[in-house]
Image (cartoon, rainbow, N blue to C red):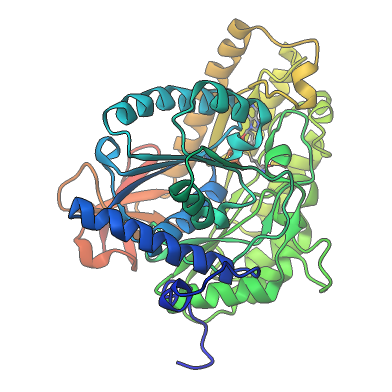
Length: 488
Ligand code: SAH
Ligand code: SF4
Ligand code: F3S
């Protein structure tokens, strides 16, 4: 209908196919390349007598997940069918993460596997993209040791997927396109969502915080907020297309709005999103404690669609370590925020991220982390062993902690955070809460899996017709980190 927002999933590619030259302007340029790729892929389809398939693997955070939905959107327009069967896929694309070393190592392992696949099927296409590709040493290694890779691109130019594929299909060499900065992201592109009923929405890109252990600012660039009008428009389109829950995405959503001409904060944005008719749930990821304002806490309290879950990464409980991490808050400020959140919104679940073994972390420092864990009583925590990332300041700190000490601390921390989380979660037993049904249960026949507002999962008897709906569920039995329930 005229005047109503539409998604970009039905671009009239025929209009672009006949153009003699690629338009200079975006997104038209990409529409043109989608049309051109569709033509070329169509010829291969005819020869093979079937559709071509793509295996689209994504690791890392929600930003990467969102990026991969955009990549899949482009590939679907071109004519690829999504498949879970990597070994027979005509195209394989990996969207990589490099936040910790093990994510990185896994990719090299998989590249070895892809090499063996490609030896048997030389016409398969292999593309690598995402955060890891923004590191020069990675691209150098691919150029040197993994010559069979067809396309390499980074985090700033995923919207060019069609153009790069076209270059590869019409030329002979590996296509590498890595940018060093965010030159402006083209948003008017198709996407294939993993879930029809929920979606991530980028509200900002990049990060300016430069925590000394973290590689994200180097691979995702400087912080850049989208205008509230663009964000609201995208969410309205999504809602029209069946989305009931959005997750507002940014590395530090609390500093949303800085650098924009409009007078806006994350708190104000939440009120605006909360007003969107048809939308039922709002989540966000991630909040940095240094920028968490009272206004934001009140906004969460007042906006009924905002879920009762706050992820507030602690990283360390020690003031010395926090300083060396460049986090700009101390233990007292952090615990003050937890208290304020719980006093203002009593049913809120607070989860966190903690790093163990940051360079120079002493036994006393670690005890401070344990102290915060006891006092904050997190509903959940992701615990990580510090991983040295080349190029970050902490990588060259002299006092790296030995692996066996780190392991001991890590195990102790993990068992405490698990015990506390399980106690906190179990406290809801016998309550009735609303769950958004996300899918059929993988383990229990005849059960569905739902997510509560506080982010805890509940499994209960039900069928596929419930998927995407929000239903009241009685939490019958706590299993520690999840519930078995029954719809009421
Ligand atoms: N922007 C988010 C975090 C993104 S990375 C924030 O600031 O909260 C997700 C988590 O990975 C971080 O919270 C941190 O706990 C962990 N992490 C990041 N770099 C790491 C490293 N070098 N070693 C171990 N864990 C790391
Ligand atoms: Fe990394 Fe810190 Fe930015 Fe989070 S806020 S992405 S931990 S630099
Ligand atoms: Fe990983 Fe990149 Fe996210 S490094 S955590 S996928 S921003």
